[in-house]
Image: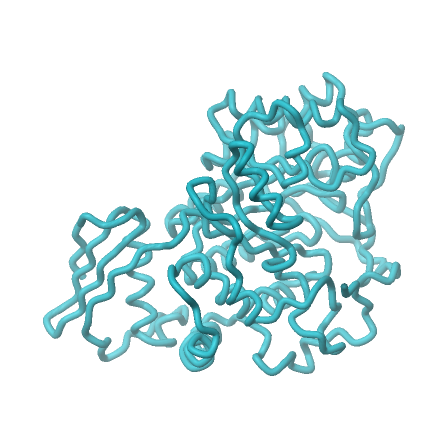
Length: 430
């Protein structure tokens, strides 16, 4: 293959296949990644196997393409259920196969703290483990200890691996709520003398105490994160904080300002819009699309990720046989036909969310994410009208065989395999 530079939009490429060879013209390094990925798609499902079987031929023609959005993201929650480094690298490969370019890595929550901070070792030795987990949403506990964490070198490896595939890893530390794991490790960060890493799902009322010492603690934590992650955007949560006071809101603002002073752009969930004096941020519009419109009007950039449309932990059909049915029904067609309400320069892009309360294995992540994430990838990449009737046979006849070759245990189009069900485990459908 001959690779050349060309005048193309950012991340764009032009792939020319002729009887005499292949020429790839690119706008930048990302364009080269995507052009090679398109060539792999044209080579057929066997090209997606680890052995990389080469086809005898590929079809001749010209493909010129570039993405619709600059932010084509997916959140992976490794706090509720830990995913090993190898499993995260595999997920990066799956994002790259779909030309998604942001991995929002949710590293901390009530149920676990997942990365080492040298100054505060108890964050992982205590906060990284819980004695049990809720089974579904019924309150029953499984009695099985769960935990794990990443070293700094693990995370640097993930960042480098993703970067080689044109993916930016955006880390997230959630404050001032979703913080029970940190509070269990260092109770002085809160208002009680002791806490436990939470073994339930839902919204905890335990918040960080917005004192000067807690602020200094988290400045140190974020500074350590900045040494590992070169991402221009760093996420700080700010969501679901029952009982938050003006002091809590000031705490979030001060940490956002700290990130700005360090040359980064803070990202928060849309609840932070209620905080006065915020610096310009990226807002993840998750509660509804109106929040994204409001954020743009306030001068913030926006990533649209509304739970009504792109939360992939929500159930995939109304059938009661769906495993641990949670949230609204988001069918494959629902995800494919999603169109963000916000337009204009403040819209950075879109992001699907894979929250993991009920995803306790890679097989469960595969089932909930795919093939809906494949449909979402087309929403994020392709401009113009979309026709589900045209998409479905392309997915069924061409892309599902690629997922098979990649070893993805996706949900079949006609419903789960028997071994993918979870009979008797209660969910929380809406």
